[in-house]
Length: 429
Image (cartoon, rainbow, N blue to C red; front, side, top):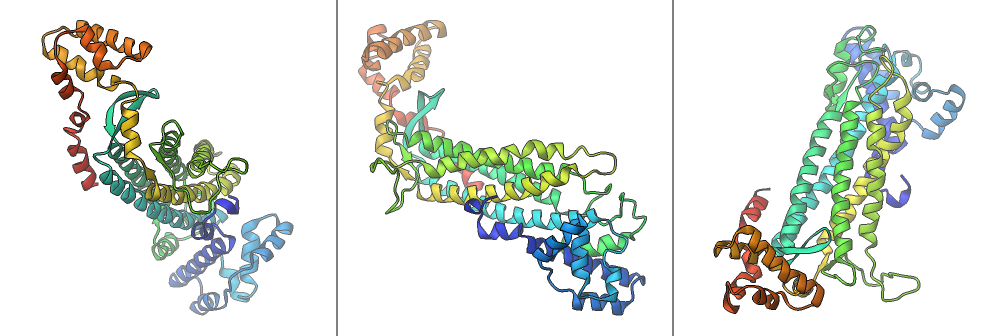
């Protein structure tokens, strides 16, 4: 991911130096495990721990240009300051024992950062939903005015969805936080199972139940898909705010800082650039879902076709979603909301938003549903075509009720009667 969208904490998770620190610790722990089994002399294990120095990524890259193997390049660089006891480094292991176990650590750390951002987002959505629980606005279906709702309910929907996304990330964290040190095809033929147990316990990882040469990629696919679903939730929120920020709607808008410029040509502009950025990056995160799942189907006990894809998609997905969560938290916390404008828009259709309530009242007063629907629709079409307020057109169509009855029917507060049940659920979230 380019630096523009990389936050320092998440960037550090995927930094080469961080990766090599994981690699080195795994190799040292494996040597210590062999020493406990009596295979490696205790003195040699102590020397490996004492002399191993952080490797220089540039030096590893230089070695790899000749060796054409990143793990061997790393092992060469790690072993040089250790001296003769370096012969025990990587003893009985295959490259993927190292690579996949270290990748589990990186993915676990990435998930922790993503979960922290998700926690903040859920909390902010809850707070703002409660703030606007009684702010009536028009609900729209197919982009057309439907019935009244509240802005708080809109935010509550987002809060519950974000919480489900957080739960998916938690499950994905559990799925990817497993290591594997089981040898070339997972049979432990060249490495004692104790080594795997020792290393993984000290790293705080679980153990792959049954491995080939690699940890099975359904785990990584679950992570990528969890990120893709959460990114789509953020896209959904951002898209709604973008619509609400349109000039002719202007019920809410993303924050606009003092000194910020909206356009190089038009000084009046306040564009939803943050939400548009979220929508754009969501496409990148979602796009990783397909290669993530395609990486599951490897030849026999393993080929390397997954490796190149993972080197791109796993860091990029993590970094992009982390950045998106950061922006989304800012947008929700500082979003400008205009309840008065919502009231104006609610009445923009001349009262058509109350057509369903009028329909039900006609049924309550004895009309068949078919006759009631036809009556209300005739009145509604006149309002659409002529601009005559719905109150007038419906009174012209039926004498079932008078102005006073319509006042009660066309009261937006009616639509909040049972809203509290949703907010009680929200409190418990």
